[in-house]
Amino acid sequence: MIFVVLFSKRLYSLCKGFHTMLKEARQNAIAAFVRERSFATLHELMQLTNSSESTIRADLVEMDKDGRILRLRGGAQSPNFDSSSFEMTVTDKSRLAVGAKRKIGAFAASLIQNRSIVYIDAGTTTAAILDSLSAKDVVFVTNSTSIGRRLTELGYETYLTGGKMKLSTDAYVGSYALDSLSRFHFDLGFFGANGVDLNEGVTTPEYEESIMKKSAIARCKKAYILADSSKFGLVSACRFAELDKVEIITDKTPEEYRRSTIKEVKA
Image (cartoon, rainbow, N blue to C red; front, top):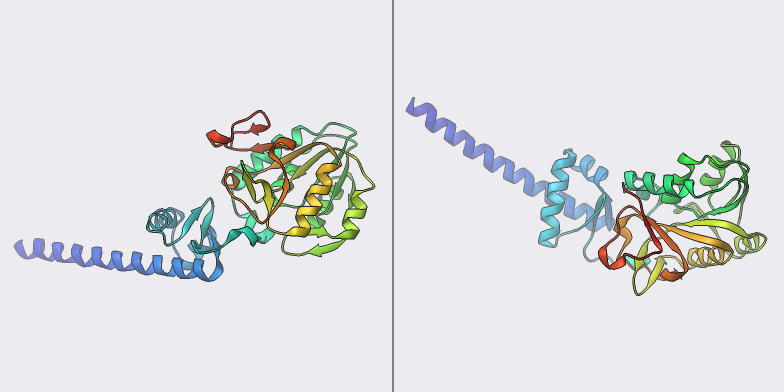
Protein backbone atom coordinates (compact mmCIF):
# COMPACT_ATOMS: atom_id res chain seq x y z
CA MET A 1 0.00 0.00 0.00
CA ILE A 2 2.83 2.35 0.89
CA PHE A 3 4.56 1.40 -2.39
CA VAL A 4 1.42 2.23 -4.38
CA VAL A 5 1.09 5.63 -2.75
CA LEU A 6 4.76 6.46 -3.31
CA PHE A 7 4.56 5.24 -6.91
CA SER A 8 1.44 7.35 -7.54
CA LYS A 9 3.13 10.45 -6.16
CA ARG A 10 6.18 9.75 -8.29
CA LEU A 11 4.02 9.25 -11.39
CA TYR A 12 2.11 12.50 -10.68
CA SER A 13 5.39 14.38 -10.31
CA LEU A 14 6.70 13.00 -13.60
CA CYS A 15 3.46 13.80 -15.44
CA LYS A 16 3.41 17.31 -14.02
CA GLY A 17 7.00 17.86 -15.14
CA PHE A 18 6.21 16.45 -18.59
CA HIS A 19 3.22 18.81 -18.91
CA THR A 20 5.41 21.78 -17.95
CA MET A 21 7.95 20.84 -20.61
CA LEU A 22 5.19 20.55 -23.18
CA LYS A 23 3.90 23.99 -22.22
CA GLU A 24 7.37 25.53 -22.47
CA ALA A 25 8.01 23.92 -25.85
CA ARG A 26 4.59 24.99 -27.10
CA GLN A 27 5.10 28.60 -26.06
CA ASN A 28 8.59 28.64 -27.58
CA ALA A 29 7.09 27.40 -30.84
CA ILE A 30 4.38 30.08 -30.69
CA ALA A 31 6.94 32.83 -30.00
CA ALA A 32 9.16 31.70 -32.88
CA PHE A 33 6.22 31.47 -35.30
CA VAL A 34 4.89 34.91 -34.39
CA ARG A 35 8.39 36.41 -34.58
CA GLU A 36 8.92 34.95 -38.06
CA ARG A 37 5.48 35.84 -39.43
CA SER A 38 5.02 39.13 -37.48
CA PHE A 39 1.38 38.10 -37.00
CA ALA A 40 -0.43 34.81 -36.43
CA THR A 41 -4.10 33.94 -36.04
CA LEU A 42 -5.48 31.81 -33.23
CA HIS A 43 -6.38 29.11 -35.76
CA GLU A 44 -2.82 29.00 -37.11
CA LEU A 45 -1.37 28.61 -33.61
CA MET A 46 -3.84 25.84 -32.80
CA GLN A 47 -2.74 23.97 -35.92
CA LEU A 48 0.95 24.66 -35.28
CA THR A 49 0.88 23.18 -31.78
CA ASN A 50 -2.02 20.73 -32.18
CA SER A 51 -3.66 22.38 -29.16
CA SER A 52 -7.16 23.44 -28.20
CA GLU A 53 -8.42 27.01 -28.47
CA SER A 54 -8.59 27.38 -24.69
CA THR A 55 -4.98 26.22 -24.32
CA ILE A 56 -3.69 28.70 -26.89
CA ARG A 57 -5.72 31.54 -25.42
CA ALA A 58 -4.23 30.81 -22.00
CA ASP A 59 -0.73 30.71 -23.52
CA LEU A 60 -1.24 34.05 -25.24
CA VAL A 61 -2.45 35.71 -22.04
CA GLU A 62 0.65 34.47 -20.20
CA MET A 63 3.04 35.32 -23.04
CA ASP A 64 1.53 38.79 -23.42
CA LYS A 65 2.20 39.47 -19.72
CA ASP A 66 5.81 38.30 -20.20
CA GLY A 67 6.22 40.59 -23.19
CA ARG A 68 6.99 37.73 -25.58
CA ILE A 69 4.04 38.53 -27.87
CA LEU A 70 1.29 41.13 -28.16
CA ARG A 71 -2.08 39.49 -27.75
CA LEU A 72 -4.66 40.66 -30.28
CA ARG A 73 -8.29 39.78 -30.76
CA GLY A 74 -8.12 36.52 -32.69
CA GLY A 75 -4.35 36.16 -32.71
CA ALA A 76 -0.97 37.50 -31.71
CA GLN A 77 1.62 39.95 -33.02
CA SER A 78 5.36 40.25 -32.55
CA PRO A 79 6.12 42.91 -29.89
CA ASN A 80 8.95 44.31 -32.01
CA PHE A 81 6.91 44.70 -35.16
CA ASP A 82 5.96 48.11 -36.55
CA SER A 83 2.34 47.63 -37.58
CA SER A 84 1.95 51.13 -39.02
CA SER A 85 3.08 50.00 -42.48
CA PHE A 86 1.82 46.40 -42.34
CA GLU A 87 -1.32 45.20 -44.09
CA MET A 88 -2.64 41.71 -43.40
CA THR A 89 -4.08 39.75 -46.28
CA VAL A 90 -7.83 39.38 -46.76
CA THR A 91 -7.53 35.72 -45.73
CA ASP A 92 -5.86 36.63 -42.42
CA LYS A 93 -8.36 39.40 -41.71
CA SER A 94 -11.34 37.15 -42.42
CA ARG A 95 -10.43 34.99 -39.40
CA LEU A 96 -10.48 37.86 -36.92
CA ALA A 97 -13.44 39.17 -34.87
CA VAL A 98 -15.93 37.20 -36.96
CA GLY A 99 -18.90 37.70 -34.62
CA ALA A 100 -18.29 41.43 -34.26
CA LYS A 101 -17.99 41.89 -38.02
CA ARG A 102 -21.27 40.05 -38.56
CA LYS A 103 -23.12 42.35 -36.15
CA ILE A 104 -21.48 45.49 -37.51
CA GLY A 105 -22.28 44.44 -41.07
CA ALA A 106 -25.92 43.74 -40.22
CA PHE A 107 -26.33 47.17 -38.63
CA ALA A 108 -24.67 48.87 -41.60
CA ALA A 109 -26.99 47.02 -44.00
CA SER A 110 -30.02 48.31 -42.07
CA LEU A 111 -28.97 51.89 -42.91
CA ILE A 112 -29.27 51.36 -46.67
CA GLN A 113 -32.52 52.69 -48.10
CA ASN A 114 -34.34 51.61 -51.25
CA ARG A 115 -33.21 53.29 -54.49
CA SER A 116 -30.01 54.69 -53.01
CA ILE A 117 -26.47 54.79 -54.42
CA VAL A 118 -23.96 53.18 -52.07
CA TYR A 119 -20.17 52.82 -52.05
CA ILE A 120 -18.64 49.79 -50.32
CA ASP A 121 -14.92 49.87 -49.66
CA ALA A 122 -12.80 46.72 -49.95
CA GLY A 123 -12.47 44.86 -46.65
CA THR A 124 -13.70 41.93 -44.59
CA THR A 125 -15.86 44.04 -42.25
CA THR A 126 -17.47 45.92 -45.13
CA ALA A 127 -18.04 42.60 -46.91
CA ALA A 128 -20.15 41.48 -43.92
CA ILE A 129 -22.80 43.99 -45.04
CA LEU A 130 -23.71 41.69 -47.90
CA ASP A 131 -24.98 38.96 -45.58
CA SER A 132 -27.83 41.19 -44.36
CA LEU A 133 -28.87 43.26 -47.38
CA SER A 134 -32.61 43.74 -47.87
CA ALA A 135 -32.97 47.16 -49.59
CA LYS A 136 -34.37 47.20 -53.12
CA ASP A 137 -33.22 48.93 -56.31
CA VAL A 138 -29.89 49.95 -54.83
CA VAL A 139 -26.92 50.81 -57.06
CA PHE A 140 -23.59 49.75 -55.58
CA VAL A 141 -20.08 50.88 -56.43
CA THR A 142 -17.06 49.08 -54.97
CA ASN A 143 -13.31 48.76 -55.43
CA SER A 144 -13.38 45.09 -54.43
CA THR A 145 -13.70 42.30 -56.99
CA SER A 146 -15.08 39.80 -54.49
CA ILE A 147 -17.64 42.25 -53.08
CA GLY A 148 -18.66 43.26 -56.59
CA ARG A 149 -19.17 39.66 -57.62
CA ARG A 150 -21.32 38.88 -54.60
CA LEU A 151 -23.46 41.99 -55.08
CA THR A 152 -24.07 41.03 -58.71
CA GLU A 153 -25.01 37.50 -57.67
CA LEU A 154 -27.52 39.03 -55.22
CA GLY A 155 -29.14 40.82 -58.15
CA TYR A 156 -27.94 44.37 -57.51
CA GLU A 157 -26.75 46.79 -60.17
CA THR A 158 -23.05 46.94 -59.39
CA TYR A 159 -20.08 48.93 -60.71
CA LEU A 160 -16.41 48.16 -60.10
CA THR A 161 -14.01 51.07 -60.07
CA GLY A 162 -11.31 49.11 -61.83
CA GLY A 163 -7.73 50.31 -61.56
CA LYS A 164 -4.51 48.80 -60.26
CA MET A 165 -5.33 45.61 -58.37
CA LYS A 166 -3.89 44.85 -54.90
CA LEU A 167 -4.30 41.12 -54.45
CA SER A 168 -3.39 41.19 -50.74
CA THR A 169 -6.38 43.37 -49.86
CA ASP A 170 -8.62 42.68 -52.89
CA ALA A 171 -8.70 46.41 -53.63
CA TYR A 172 -8.49 48.50 -56.78
CA VAL A 173 -6.39 51.65 -56.34
CA GLY A 174 -4.62 54.25 -58.48
CA SER A 175 -5.54 56.98 -60.95
CA TYR A 176 -7.94 54.84 -63.01
CA ALA A 177 -9.93 53.92 -59.90
CA LEU A 178 -9.99 57.56 -58.76
CA ASP A 179 -11.29 58.64 -62.17
CA SER A 180 -14.11 56.09 -61.88
CA LEU A 181 -15.06 57.46 -58.46
CA SER A 182 -15.34 60.98 -59.87
CA ARG A 183 -18.37 59.88 -61.92
CA PHE A 184 -20.52 59.16 -58.86
CA HIS A 185 -22.18 60.87 -55.90
CA PHE A 186 -23.09 58.48 -53.09
CA ASP A 187 -25.90 58.56 -50.57
CA LEU A 188 -23.90 56.33 -48.24
CA GLY A 189 -20.40 54.94 -48.08
CA PHE A 190 -18.98 52.20 -45.87
CA PHE A 191 -15.24 51.99 -45.22
CA GLY A 192 -12.80 49.69 -43.48
CA ALA A 193 -9.91 50.89 -41.30
CA ASN A 194 -6.81 49.56 -39.59
CA GLY A 195 -6.72 52.14 -36.84
CA VAL A 196 -9.04 54.61 -35.08
CA ASP A 197 -7.30 57.12 -32.82
CA LEU A 198 -8.50 60.24 -31.01
CA ASN A 199 -5.55 62.32 -32.20
CA GLU A 200 -4.61 60.72 -35.51
CA GLY A 201 -8.08 59.94 -36.86
CA VAL A 202 -8.82 56.95 -39.09
CA THR A 203 -5.80 55.31 -40.71
CA THR A 204 -4.67 52.56 -43.07
CA PRO A 205 -1.14 51.29 -43.84
CA GLU A 206 -0.95 51.93 -47.58
CA TYR A 207 -0.84 55.34 -49.29
CA GLU A 208 -2.79 54.52 -52.48
CA GLU A 209 -5.58 52.88 -50.50
CA SER A 210 -5.76 55.90 -48.18
CA ILE A 211 -6.21 58.21 -51.18
CA MET A 212 -8.92 55.93 -52.55
CA LYS A 213 -10.80 55.94 -49.24
CA LYS A 214 -10.43 59.70 -48.75
CA SER A 215 -11.68 60.44 -52.27
CA ALA A 216 -14.70 58.16 -51.90
CA ILE A 217 -15.60 59.68 -48.51
CA ALA A 218 -15.58 63.13 -50.11
CA ARG A 219 -18.28 61.93 -52.53
CA CYS A 220 -20.60 60.52 -49.83
CA LYS A 221 -23.46 62.35 -48.15
CA LYS A 222 -22.88 60.05 -45.15
CA ALA A 223 -19.70 58.08 -44.56
CA TYR A 224 -19.41 55.25 -42.05
CA ILE A 225 -16.27 53.58 -40.74
CA LEU A 226 -16.84 49.91 -39.84
CA ALA A 227 -14.32 48.98 -37.15
CA ASP A 228 -14.41 46.33 -34.44
CA SER A 229 -13.18 47.35 -30.99
CA SER A 230 -9.62 46.05 -31.55
CA LYS A 231 -8.99 48.97 -33.95
CA PHE A 232 -9.33 51.70 -31.30
CA GLY A 233 -6.06 53.27 -30.22
CA LEU A 234 -4.18 51.91 -33.24
CA VAL A 235 -2.45 54.20 -35.74
CA SER A 236 -1.33 53.13 -39.22
CA ALA A 237 0.88 55.05 -41.61
CA CYS A 238 -1.72 56.98 -43.63
CA ARG A 239 -4.68 59.00 -42.34
CA PHE A 240 -7.74 59.17 -44.57
CA ALA A 241 -10.45 60.66 -42.34
CA GLU A 242 -10.92 62.89 -39.30
CA LEU A 243 -13.13 61.47 -36.57
CA ASP A 244 -15.55 64.39 -36.74
CA LYS A 245 -16.11 63.87 -40.49
CA VAL A 246 -17.36 60.27 -40.31
CA GLU A 247 -19.53 58.03 -38.15
CA ILE A 248 -18.08 54.86 -36.67
CA ILE A 249 -19.98 51.60 -36.33
CA THR A 250 -18.37 49.25 -33.82
CA ASP A 251 -19.13 46.47 -31.35
CA LYS A 252 -17.62 48.09 -28.26
CA THR A 253 -16.48 51.66 -27.64
CA PRO A 254 -13.67 52.55 -25.19
CA GLU A 255 -14.82 55.18 -22.68
CA GLU A 256 -12.56 57.93 -24.02
CA TYR A 257 -14.01 57.48 -27.52
CA ARG A 258 -17.67 57.74 -26.55
CA ARG A 259 -19.24 60.41 -28.67
CA SER A 260 -22.31 61.10 -30.80
CA THR A 261 -20.68 59.94 -34.04
CA ILE A 262 -20.10 56.39 -32.79
CA LYS A 263 -22.84 53.80 -33.17
CA GLU A 264 -22.30 50.74 -30.99
CA VAL A 265 -23.89 47.39 -31.80
CA LYS A 266 -23.80 44.45 -29.43
CA ALA A 267 -21.64 41.61 -30.74
